[in-house]
Length: 153
Image (cartoon, rainbow, N blue to C red; front, side, top):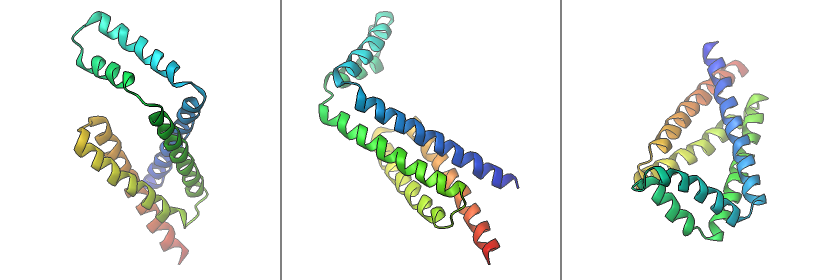
């Protein structure tokens, strides 16, 4: 019973994540690139006022300055598509559709592989944490799927 509750919490987290991605994609779609750049510059400028040698703030400022319009389009499409897929799969898992379990494992597993690839290049601890969470969620989905298949016999 505890594992089932953990599964429910895991898919709830995935649902919230999907919703936040959808919101982020819609914000990117609605807000002009120059406005996003201006907001990031203001945030970073505040940080740089306190510490002029802040490497992270300088890197963010440089990245924003170099941000092409195509990046915004890619990020918008990625967030909207990823969010839609997650929300669809969370809904199907919540409704206990057996086909959704292996599909969710495949989709999340694909993202785990991509995240590991990105981690190898970026060494981002945040990305590593999300990857570990996704692996744990895959494990919970797999256990729940096994229990569902067993009880369906």
